[in-house]
Image 1: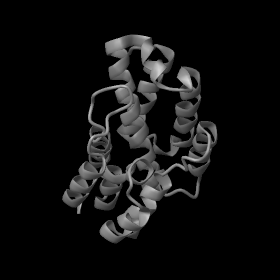
Image 2: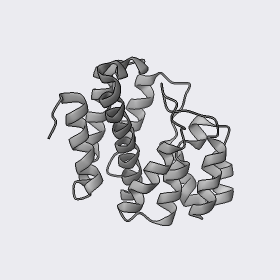
Image 3: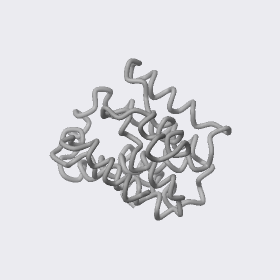
Image 4: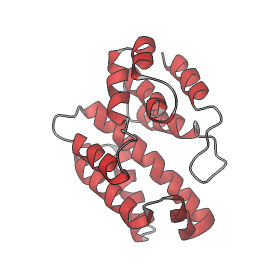
Length: 180
């Protein structure tokens, strides 16, 4: 199933690039899947990592995901899919609110892996071009800091996972200038 998800995600994201770069977008879902694999994630979770942005950012529907990969994968992808008709602040607040005691550990792992991959990308870009990286984001550094910081608080139940520790460390480096 993972092999099929790799092919499906690569086709769905074909031609897309990471924000403000020439990096193929598919690098992000692949990295999320690798983080989840390293964390001991199930096959369904790794597939959801590969597919997590397909519904939000391509023409793929949740029904297609369910048909090809099953209800568990589709449910996880659905949790990661933002409603693009809402404002950035409303979408991010909904994402934060969804990370509650009722959310499964696997879903929280998926959120954590996604945020970690994004912060790794921001860190790499900051190393290359400095603070100008924030010009790629309509809401800028302070709003991003609020979003990632609040997500880290909500994901604290994952504190025993190395990916969570790395997420916290990267947050400090990216937003607070700490370099250890």
